[in-house]
Amino acid sequence: MESIVPDVFLSYNREDQAVARRFAEAFEREGLNVWWDVTLRSGEAYDQVTERALRDARAVVVLWSRKSVESRWVRAEATLADRQHTLVPAMIEPCERPIMFELTQTADLCHWQGDLRDPAWQQFLADVRQFVERRAAYTRVPEARQYHVQATAAAPVAKPNASPERTTGADAKRDHRPSLAILPFTNRSRDPEDEVFADGMVEDLISALSLDRSLRVLARSATELLRGQTGDLEAIGRRLAVRYLLEGNVRRVGASLRVTAQLVEAESGAILWSQRFDRPLAELADLQEALTTEVAAHLGVRVQQAEVERALRKPDNLSAWEAVMRASAAGPTRTRMAKILDELRNAVAIEPDYALAHAYLAFNVASFNWFWKGGRDAAAIQEANLHADCALALDPRDPLVVSEASQALCMCGRWDEGLRWAERAVALNPNCAASHSSMIASTMYFGRHEELLRHLDAYQELAPNDSWASVRQLQRGGAHYMAGRYDEALRACQQSLLLDPNQIFALKDAVVYLEKLGRRPEARDYVRRLRAVDPDGTLDLWEARHTASLLRPEVAAEMFDAFKRVWLDTPVEPASA
Image: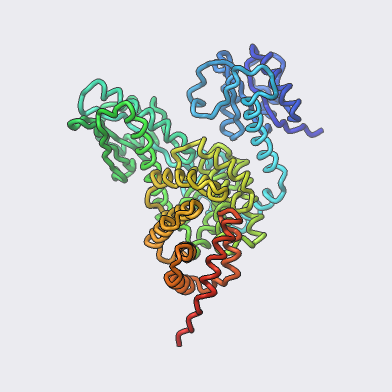
């Protein structure tokens, strides 16, 4: 007889059994199937039944208490659940969690006595249900499994044993991320207060960068023995088994504190990025957090750029990570879209359970259909939905996965879900530009223009001048338009065109903003430019593009009416002989 897959696996210490029973009964009253071990655990061997339930469970609820944090059973179960992306922890009494779980979002239910109406319980239950529904969808949707088989058969896969960097199975999932070690910062001013500041900077940078699930950051304990050592960075890189090293120093310069940081490729010793940050000593109390955010943002972007360059230099035998990096380098343009999709389909074929590849593929399939086909391709919508659901089922804790998938859901018309996942992405890592990107899409649709501008500002700070800079200016124009600030909307639109003169959506929006400002002759000039750049763009297609836009339907319709008036008032240029 086939065993039932548990919705919830309850991990707890035996001395907390009464509290665990409260959770189990509450979950069951909510219709969830719960597996929990109410017998004593004895012996050295890990019970096979328990392990099978743990591995199969759609959500693993770990109850942290003073006893459970000391339990090797609970720690082992939490570790496996975290590896499988099914961990949903809760605090049932004040305690210090194991350090590896300190950065995992944890519900505070220390006060909870079983009241099903309690807001904290309701929020925790919603989180658990989200895990259960996503994992259940992934395992029961036959199209997802069928797609994996088709993709693996159709896409070009690297030759076996062709590259020593290629691994398979679980090893491939562990090893694809770039690795980084942050060396102890040097205090060059020799002031004891600055020594504390330097150590705090390293700790905070490790914590901030650890939120980026696409980057493997070594714990401070791994680098502390290197304090005061200088010299052969290549040897240090080999010793720590990392690809990148971050060095830094702190010193006082007059009335300022200066932090200098540089990113080094361990294998070659090449400096990939270096920057100096100066802050007034009078602001020292608020300095560390702001500096940590700024350094982490620059560093994350630069590591990604370095990974893209490495992937582009590699001619074949790509890993799934390298294929995703190559796709991200192609840029959001129509002419490059076929290459992007080829790279991402290759990534999914190499590693079918790679969440980030599914998320990127979902986003790019959806955006290509959205921007270039007016959102009218039903097959593309189905494919994007499928990959977004797969990505969220595979890794709902990775902010990059969540943000890319949430944007795909929005472009497939699942706006409420997209907004919830976008909010989750920002909660998971507010210092990730992609998290704010997902909120940009959601807040634009729901007409929250001031919030939209805040997320655009955050994105600009975290990823200045990236390949989406033209699009971000375009979206900034949309925010000002919704607020009735047509002059500011036009300025943002023109800035978008300075960055990309052939940005057809910026040309189109300029037509609308000029029409709203009563500047019809200039608006007609932009229509002529638009027709030259996008000769296939008929009025019907532009109506479809407006209908499928990120804006609310009534705003999109209003913009199209303005655009249509100018379009029809602009004679078609005769074809040149």
